[in-house]
Each structure stands twice: as C-alpha cells, then as structure tokens.
Length: 240
Ligand SMILES: C[S@@+](CC[C@H](N)C(=O)[O-])C[C@H]1O[C@@H](n2cnc3c(N)ncnc32)[C@H](O)[C@@H]1O
Image (tube, rainbow, N blue to C red; front, top):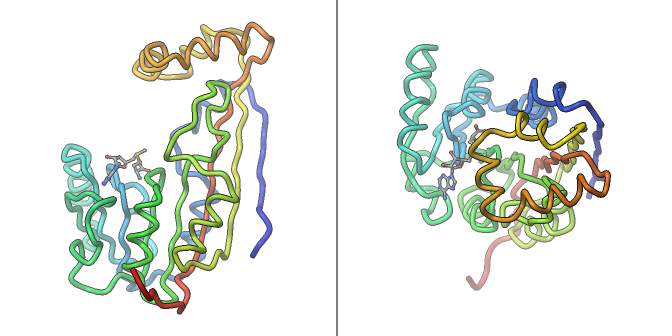
C-alpha cells in the first residue's frame, strides 16, 4: 500500500478563489500518467464533461454519465465546438445502474471528479476487468471542516482504503490535496462562497458553526480532496 502523498498550503482567500473550481493538479497528473490511448473510459458524474475532455485529449474514448440533462447538453455542445469525436454523453444514475448499460464495449477505466460514493465504487469494481483502472478525486473528510458537517460524499484515507480493498481494488496512488483559505472576516467568506452556498449554509446551520469559529479567532476554511488511482485485482467475487 503506498504512503499517502500530501500537499498542503495556507493562502489568502483571494489567491484560493482564482482556481477554486479547477480540476486538482494531483488528479490531472494521475489521469495523464495513465496510458489511456484507445481505452474505453467512463467518467461518472461527468457534469459538463471537463474531466472527460482531459481523458479524450490523451486519446481515450470517453463516455460521460450524469443525471443532469442541462449539464449533459453543455458537455455535448462543447464537444461539438472543440470537435471531440471520441466523447459521448449519456443520461444515467451511476449509483443505481450497472455500468455495462452505458457502454457497448468493455470498460477499461472509470474516472470521476467529485462524484463518489460506496455505490459508485461497488459498480466500478463490477464493471472493470482485472487490471482496469479507477482514478478519481473525492472530497476529503476535512473538506469545509470548520462547518462541522460531514458529507456522505467525503472520505478519510482509511475508510477509502477499506472500501477499495473490499471491492477488489489495489491502490497505486493515494493523495490528499489541502488548501486552507484565510480570511479577515465573514464578509470575505460571503464573497468567496457563492450566494447559493451561503444561503444553503444559513438554512442548514453551517453558517452558524462558521460564525462561532470566526468568533474564536479561527478565520479560515479548509478545502481538501482525496485523490486515488487504483487497479482492479484478479480476485473474483464469489457469493454476492
Ligand atoms: C460536483 S459535480 C462534478 C462534475 C464534474 N465531474 C466536474 O468535475 O465538473 C457532481 C456531478 O455528479 C452528478 N451526479 C451526482 N449523483 C449522480 C448520480 N447518482 N448519477 C449520475 N450523476 C450524478 C451531478 O449531477 C453533478 O454533475
């Protein structure tokens, strides 16, 4: 099992805001270092397809799946504009649907950015042949930790290792990419987060937790991501 690679930085929030929505370099590195030329790749929770386009640009034949019709429309439009012929975008629920229903060909790799759950790991394991690749970024358990609200879509290293092992994956890379954004006051947090996020946090109590943290002098927000590359082992499934 490889050691956890850690990248961590404290930055003024205006610096963090510049690339807060970008794909993490650690994830891009894992995707780009894998030889995906000619491979059939499934991007689960593809959104408007930005990770799918990264894989397509290194020669993969990508199917992006999402539940959101509008995002899929954007992905298809972008594929048309940029003339990406090796991408398809299909509507589907990646937590409920066996992945062979999304692809006529066997799937060589599953990739994902910020759409991860035990169900997705379960389906990915059943979809991939031995040796098949699984690369993803998920929220780390420390993401937004100042709001004291865990998410079912966030994972710590140990629970992710267990989940992957249970599902017949061998981890080749595991990394945590953490940025702590520093603020002077809550007004800056409002500028940093989008209005919709602030409204949601006010409604569900996270804003109050954050206010309490700022009152204690803890004027920061943690953004943290778990990045994994794993390979399907040869271990078969016996009794399901
Ligand atoms: C945080 S966004 C990430 C989108 C994209 N991977 C990116 O990096 O821009 C999560 C995406 O997962 C999709 N999603 C969530 N649950 C899903 C499910 N069960 N099946 C398919 N898509 C799902 C959402 O619609 C959304 O587009």
